[in-house]
Length: 254
Image (tube, rainbow, N blue to C red; front, top):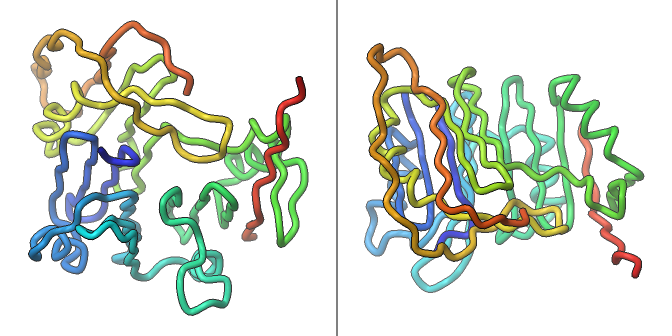
């Protein structure tokens, strides 16, 4: 079972979609594609993000259970955050999540720490408004850590009008380019319900309960862009400069 659900798109109609039951990929960088085609292939993908000028970050699980990563042409502040002057990545690869944007912007975080740089002004303001305290060693978020950013929203610099959005109700919405529709529509009925913990890590897929097959996807009469796709697998509810530091999430008071 995959650790995260992944949706990423890059230049030249490249994309990678990941769910507990499906992988779909197209036009990935050769170094990344080789991991899927070599024998034995990788066992699982934890995070894959594509950026501008050939940039990418990939964390994956090998057939023998190791968690490794590859990356290329990442922003310098992000490299500093990942390595912290060490010869190897010091972040928790099992929970590390990275978003790359335009003009070398990024947001990265794992279960212990966070770093961001060159965010759009309104997003920077939103993050800082939720920040209680930060120094080189730690980051404290407001409301006992529950204001730490967590994302069920996927945006794509190479396709500015596209998105995939997960709601806490279990519904999913999307607006994606037509060349992704075949793969996405295979995956959409199998997207997992998620559980959002109070830890500042992405929502984690939960086991699915049996449910009837959804109605077939209806293509629009004009093939311009994908309509918003909504899928509710069941009615059951679910709980779901540069900056860096460690999260501190104090225990809830009884």
